[in-house]
Length: 238
Image (cartoon, rainbow, N blue to C red; front, side, top):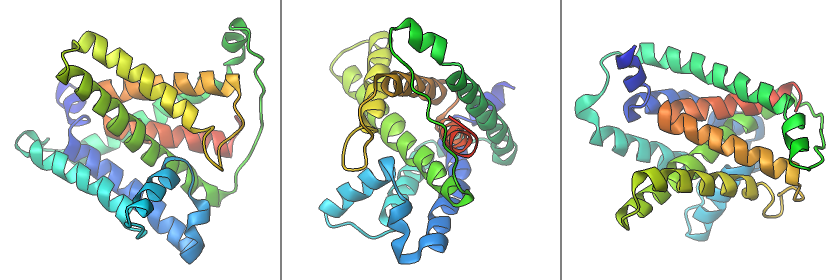
Protein backbone atom coordinates (compact mmCIF):
# COMPACT_ATOMS: atom_id res chain seq x y z
CA UNK A 1 0.00 0.00 0.00
CA UNK A 2 2.81 2.40 0.83
CA UNK A 3 4.46 1.80 -2.54
CA UNK A 4 1.13 2.41 -4.28
CA UNK A 5 0.52 5.67 -2.40
CA UNK A 6 3.97 6.87 -3.42
CA UNK A 7 3.57 5.65 -7.01
CA UNK A 8 0.38 7.66 -7.62
CA UNK A 9 2.25 10.87 -6.81
CA UNK A 10 5.17 10.15 -9.12
CA UNK A 11 5.21 12.36 -12.26
CA UNK A 12 5.85 9.41 -14.60
CA UNK A 13 2.72 7.59 -13.40
CA UNK A 14 0.77 10.85 -13.55
CA UNK A 15 1.98 11.36 -17.13
CA UNK A 16 0.78 7.88 -18.13
CA UNK A 17 -2.56 8.54 -16.44
CA UNK A 18 -2.97 11.96 -18.07
CA UNK A 19 -1.96 10.85 -21.58
CA UNK A 20 -5.14 8.93 -22.56
CA UNK A 21 -7.38 11.63 -21.05
CA UNK A 22 -5.62 14.36 -23.02
CA UNK A 23 -5.60 12.24 -26.18
CA UNK A 24 -9.33 11.52 -25.85
CA UNK A 25 -10.08 15.19 -25.29
CA UNK A 26 -7.98 16.65 -28.09
CA UNK A 27 -8.73 13.83 -30.53
CA UNK A 28 -12.42 13.85 -29.69
CA UNK A 29 -12.74 17.59 -30.26
CA UNK A 30 -11.00 17.30 -33.63
CA UNK A 31 -13.29 14.42 -34.60
CA UNK A 32 -16.42 16.32 -33.55
CA UNK A 33 -15.55 19.82 -34.67
CA UNK A 34 -12.68 19.62 -37.12
CA UNK A 35 -11.59 23.15 -37.90
CA UNK A 36 -14.37 24.44 -35.63
CA UNK A 37 -13.22 22.49 -32.56
CA UNK A 38 -12.47 25.77 -30.76
CA UNK A 39 -16.20 26.27 -30.12
CA UNK A 40 -16.14 23.30 -27.74
CA UNK A 41 -13.28 24.70 -25.69
CA UNK A 42 -13.86 26.77 -22.57
CA UNK A 43 -12.38 27.64 -19.21
CA UNK A 44 -8.67 27.17 -18.66
CA UNK A 45 -8.16 25.57 -22.07
CA UNK A 46 -9.52 28.65 -23.86
CA UNK A 47 -7.55 31.03 -21.61
CA UNK A 48 -4.35 29.06 -22.12
CA UNK A 49 -4.73 29.02 -25.89
CA UNK A 50 -5.59 32.73 -25.97
CA UNK A 51 -2.35 33.48 -24.08
CA UNK A 52 -0.39 31.32 -26.51
CA UNK A 53 -1.93 33.11 -29.48
CA UNK A 54 -0.84 36.46 -28.04
CA UNK A 55 2.75 35.18 -28.26
CA UNK A 56 2.25 33.78 -31.75
CA UNK A 57 1.89 30.13 -30.71
CA UNK A 58 -1.65 29.48 -31.81
CA UNK A 59 -1.25 26.00 -33.31
CA UNK A 60 -3.86 23.59 -31.98
CA UNK A 61 -1.22 21.12 -30.73
CA UNK A 62 0.89 23.65 -28.83
CA UNK A 63 -1.20 23.57 -25.64
CA UNK A 64 -1.23 19.77 -25.16
CA UNK A 65 2.43 19.62 -26.22
CA UNK A 66 3.35 22.07 -23.45
CA UNK A 67 1.38 20.10 -20.85
CA UNK A 68 2.95 16.80 -21.88
CA UNK A 69 6.38 18.40 -22.17
CA UNK A 70 6.22 19.70 -18.61
CA UNK A 71 5.15 16.26 -17.38
CA UNK A 72 7.96 14.56 -19.30
CA UNK A 73 10.59 16.95 -17.96
CA UNK A 74 9.27 16.41 -14.44
CA UNK A 75 9.34 12.63 -15.04
CA UNK A 76 12.92 12.79 -16.32
CA UNK A 77 13.92 14.71 -13.20
CA UNK A 78 12.46 11.91 -11.04
CA UNK A 79 13.35 9.04 -13.37
CA UNK A 80 15.64 7.30 -10.87
CA UNK A 81 12.84 6.60 -8.39
CA UNK A 82 10.05 5.81 -10.85
CA UNK A 83 7.66 2.99 -9.81
CA UNK A 84 8.27 -0.46 -11.25
CA UNK A 85 4.59 -1.20 -11.92
CA UNK A 86 2.88 1.95 -13.23
CA UNK A 87 0.02 -0.05 -14.81
CA UNK A 88 -1.31 -1.27 -11.46
CA UNK A 89 -1.05 2.25 -10.07
CA UNK A 90 -2.95 3.56 -13.12
CA UNK A 91 -5.99 1.37 -12.38
CA UNK A 92 -5.90 2.36 -8.72
CA UNK A 93 -5.78 6.02 -9.71
CA UNK A 94 -8.79 5.56 -11.97
CA UNK A 95 -10.76 4.06 -9.08
CA UNK A 96 -9.70 6.83 -6.72
CA UNK A 97 -10.60 9.49 -9.26
CA UNK A 98 -14.13 8.15 -9.56
CA UNK A 99 -14.44 7.85 -5.78
CA UNK A 100 -13.26 11.40 -5.09
CA UNK A 101 -15.44 12.76 -7.93
CA UNK A 102 -18.51 11.14 -6.38
CA UNK A 103 -17.61 12.52 -2.95
CA UNK A 104 -17.50 16.10 -4.27
CA UNK A 105 -20.61 15.54 -6.37
CA UNK A 106 -22.56 14.36 -3.33
CA UNK A 107 -21.24 17.32 -1.34
CA UNK A 108 -22.43 19.70 -4.05
CA UNK A 109 -25.90 18.14 -3.94
CA UNK A 110 -26.09 18.77 -0.18
CA UNK A 111 -24.50 22.20 -0.18
CA UNK A 112 -27.68 24.15 0.62
CA UNK A 113 -27.55 23.83 4.47
CA UNK A 114 -23.92 25.01 4.51
CA UNK A 115 -24.44 27.95 2.21
CA UNK A 116 -27.67 28.93 3.99
CA UNK A 117 -25.70 29.08 7.22
CA UNK A 118 -23.51 31.74 5.63
CA UNK A 119 -26.56 33.83 4.80
CA UNK A 120 -26.26 33.25 1.05
CA UNK A 121 -29.23 32.18 -1.04
CA UNK A 122 -28.29 29.11 -3.04
CA UNK A 123 -29.69 29.03 -6.56
CA UNK A 124 -29.83 25.53 -8.01
CA UNK A 125 -29.58 25.25 -11.77
CA UNK A 126 -30.45 21.88 -13.27
CA UNK A 127 -28.77 21.17 -16.56
CA UNK A 128 -27.98 18.17 -18.69
CA UNK A 129 -25.42 17.75 -21.39
CA UNK A 130 -25.28 15.76 -24.61
CA UNK A 131 -22.66 13.05 -24.82
CA UNK A 132 -20.46 15.24 -27.03
CA UNK A 133 -20.01 17.75 -24.23
CA UNK A 134 -18.43 15.13 -21.99
CA UNK A 135 -15.21 15.92 -23.83
CA UNK A 136 -15.52 19.56 -22.79
CA UNK A 137 -15.88 18.52 -19.15
CA UNK A 138 -12.81 16.29 -19.39
CA UNK A 139 -10.82 19.12 -20.93
CA UNK A 140 -11.86 21.50 -18.17
CA UNK A 141 -10.64 19.03 -15.58
CA UNK A 142 -7.29 18.67 -17.31
CA UNK A 143 -6.44 22.27 -18.07
CA UNK A 144 -7.89 23.78 -14.89
CA UNK A 145 -5.74 21.45 -12.79
CA UNK A 146 -2.70 22.29 -14.92
CA UNK A 147 -3.31 26.01 -14.51
CA UNK A 148 -4.58 26.33 -10.93
CA UNK A 149 -2.99 23.43 -9.07
CA UNK A 150 0.20 22.55 -10.91
CA UNK A 151 0.92 26.08 -12.08
CA UNK A 152 -0.60 28.62 -9.69
CA UNK A 153 -0.61 26.68 -6.43
CA UNK A 154 2.76 25.04 -7.07
CA UNK A 155 4.27 28.33 -8.24
CA UNK A 156 2.96 30.27 -5.23
CA UNK A 157 4.33 27.71 -2.80
CA UNK A 158 7.72 27.89 -4.50
CA UNK A 159 7.78 31.71 -4.44
CA UNK A 160 6.70 31.90 -0.80
CA UNK A 161 9.31 29.35 0.25
CA UNK A 162 12.03 31.20 -1.68
CA UNK A 163 11.29 34.45 0.16
CA UNK A 164 11.51 32.67 3.47
CA UNK A 165 7.90 31.83 4.34
CA UNK A 166 7.75 28.49 6.20
CA UNK A 167 5.89 25.64 4.55
CA UNK A 168 3.24 25.50 7.27
CA UNK A 169 2.20 29.01 6.22
CA UNK A 170 3.07 28.95 2.52
CA UNK A 171 0.95 25.90 1.65
CA UNK A 172 -2.40 27.07 3.12
CA UNK A 173 -1.89 30.63 1.83
CA UNK A 174 -1.15 29.34 -1.67
CA UNK A 175 -4.06 26.89 -1.46
CA UNK A 176 -6.59 29.59 -0.59
CA UNK A 177 -5.19 32.01 -3.19
CA UNK A 178 -5.30 29.40 -5.96
CA UNK A 179 -8.78 28.23 -4.94
CA UNK A 180 -10.14 31.79 -4.94
CA UNK A 181 -8.54 32.45 -8.34
CA UNK A 182 -10.07 29.22 -9.64
CA UNK A 183 -13.52 30.37 -8.47
CA UNK A 184 -13.12 33.93 -9.76
CA UNK A 185 -11.92 32.78 -13.17
CA UNK A 186 -15.35 31.35 -13.94
CA UNK A 187 -16.77 34.88 -13.84
CA UNK A 188 -14.12 36.62 -15.97
CA UNK A 189 -14.05 37.26 -19.68
CA UNK A 190 -16.65 37.13 -22.46
CA UNK A 191 -17.70 33.57 -21.54
CA UNK A 192 -17.71 34.14 -17.79
CA UNK A 193 -20.84 33.67 -15.72
CA UNK A 194 -22.45 36.56 -13.80
CA UNK A 195 -20.95 36.79 -10.31
CA UNK A 196 -22.94 34.78 -7.79
CA UNK A 197 -21.91 34.34 -4.16
CA UNK A 198 -23.16 30.76 -3.94
CA UNK A 199 -21.17 29.63 -6.97
CA UNK A 200 -18.07 31.50 -5.83
CA UNK A 201 -18.15 29.95 -2.33
CA UNK A 202 -18.72 26.45 -3.65
CA UNK A 203 -16.03 26.71 -6.32
CA UNK A 204 -13.55 28.03 -3.77
CA UNK A 205 -14.37 25.04 -1.59
CA UNK A 206 -13.99 22.74 -4.58
CA UNK A 207 -10.65 24.37 -5.38
CA UNK A 208 -9.43 23.62 -1.86
CA UNK A 209 -10.66 20.04 -2.26
CA UNK A 210 -8.71 19.55 -5.49
CA UNK A 211 -5.65 21.16 -3.90
CA UNK A 212 -5.88 18.67 -1.03
CA UNK A 213 -6.02 15.83 -3.55
CA UNK A 214 -3.09 17.33 -5.46
CA UNK A 215 -0.94 17.51 -2.32
CA UNK A 216 -1.92 14.19 -0.76
CA UNK A 217 -2.79 11.94 -3.73
CA UNK A 218 -0.93 13.54 -6.62
CA UNK A 219 -1.58 15.51 -9.78
CA UNK A 220 -3.05 12.61 -11.77
CA UNK A 221 -5.79 11.85 -9.27
CA UNK A 222 -6.61 15.57 -8.93
CA UNK A 223 -7.11 15.72 -12.71
CA UNK A 224 -9.16 12.52 -12.76
CA UNK A 225 -11.38 13.61 -9.87
CA UNK A 226 -11.93 17.06 -11.38
CA UNK A 227 -12.80 15.68 -14.81
CA UNK A 228 -15.01 13.01 -13.24
CA UNK A 229 -16.86 15.57 -11.14
CA UNK A 230 -17.46 17.84 -14.16
CA UNK A 231 -18.85 14.87 -16.11
CA UNK A 232 -21.17 13.91 -13.24
CA UNK A 233 -22.43 17.49 -12.95
CA UNK A 234 -22.94 17.83 -16.68
CA UNK A 235 -24.52 14.46 -17.34
CA UNK A 236 -26.64 14.08 -14.22
CA UNK A 237 -27.58 17.27 -12.31
CA UNK A 238 -25.91 20.12 -10.46
